[in-house]
Length: 429
Ligand code: EPZ
Image 1: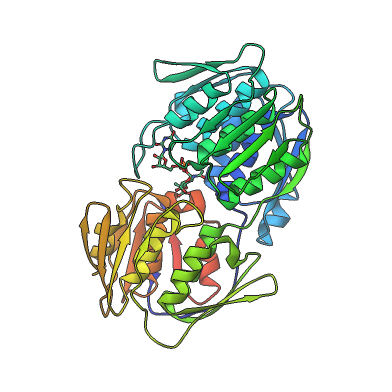
Image 2: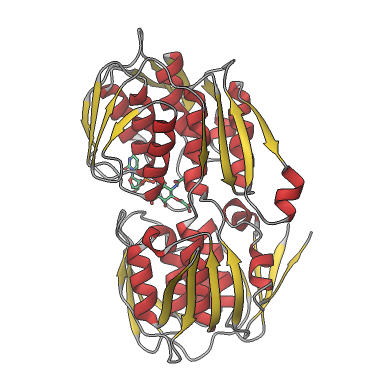
């Protein structure tokens, strides 16, 4: 299994290109199931999760082709991928595939909408929490679907097709908002989704669906109205920049010091995190096609954050911010409200010398003068990258195990950091 070795202590200086957002790419790929025309996605990041979902869609009969694969990849540019779901050959998403990637459960919406049936394995729990799917099931029932849970599968049908309905989500869910919005595009009549997620990825999906001919109003607010249409067409859509990758590298620079321009992104995508990073002592300046990140010359200030649905502080940046706070000049309180088990990095950061105490969903992080390198590992993507950030300032070598987590969501991580002066290498085997 590959590992990443980091020798801490170097400032970061240079340019980091920000990739297309993983969490926009996945629902956009799934939207290809809604039409028998070709959906072309540009700026698709080269990530293990994208490859995994390509295989899952292939199982349903989706053909795909990649334009200019090698050249674009070598130049560090996102790929353009064409998806065509003219012949859906299978409406079952089996356990073996769904258990590998949670977001593949989301095919249930488009399959029901277009094929009027779907049998999709329940995804089960995962490292960061129990992650139930009750909101998806109730929401699809509100659109007229009949759904039974049988032997670990959601077996769904909508004879004659889905019909528009009104559904208020009991809790803000990004995935359920994606799925219900996609399903409603082909339902008969109007659907109103209340308490919807407002993440930029929801707006990106709505923009793509609109380009495909869907009628959607209010994406990005908590009430989304969708007027169903008889069929959707193909479209060409560019995936928006990854705000989590943006925030992660901004925090890395806040940690190490230096001067880095993050290109192809903008700070409007992460209002709460940008505020917290600035309060911690970094200067974020909008520049043409990106954000310049510098340390303000002083130390790192302790800043309290609480995760919340967008526009709040993202749970997907909580671990990275905690890494930053391990070197603050005070005590920071970090509260996780989205997932009940998203503090798996705490023990690992402690191995590097961090002082963190946990009480339920609240972590108290007392800044220390120095971290010291050690072997570490993490059980999820964002926790893993928090260890990389800590490793960038730890004295000596930090060896991050289970790199496959990083490969799920960070494109060419070691190359991007290495080009800015970090001493970082992948050790194969
Ligand atoms: C998306 O997951 C992201 N994944 C996650 O990114 C992210 O952490 C999360 O949103 C929150 O921002 C993708 O976009 C592919 P939710 P999702 O449904 O949609 C509860 C990463 O590292 N809930 O918004 O699965 C749920 O348990 C990741 O890239 C129910 O109770 O998250 C959680 O507490 C991991 N019932 C809360 O809602 C349901 O039916 C929010 O989850 C659905 C969700």
